[in-house]
Length: 112
View 1: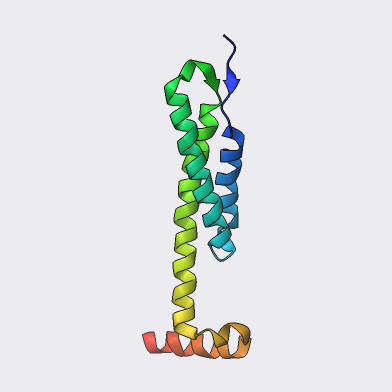
View 2: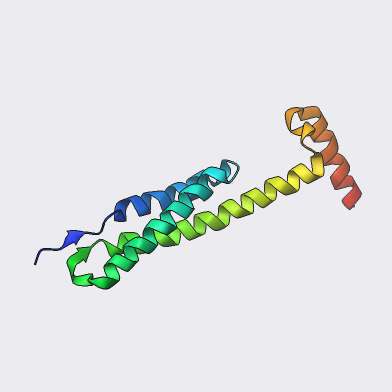
């Protein structure tokens, strides 16, 4: 019997990579790709577990799942970082570089 490729194996890998690469985009885009990659990996793993001799490409699924998990963690950390920054400098300072610098200097001077 000829093995067929596991559905979405390459796509899962690509989504895992994208979730890591886009973590600097405020954490939202990468989080979405990471979650989608994880859901697709779960479906592919279930399919593979039913009949492993029928499918190939499970290594891509495992690697994509791992990358998706790493991407999700990184994106959550980025989201928390942005929430922390906004809580320190305020939403209005994000649009004004001078005000942002002033509030950051005040914050770090108060730490000393």
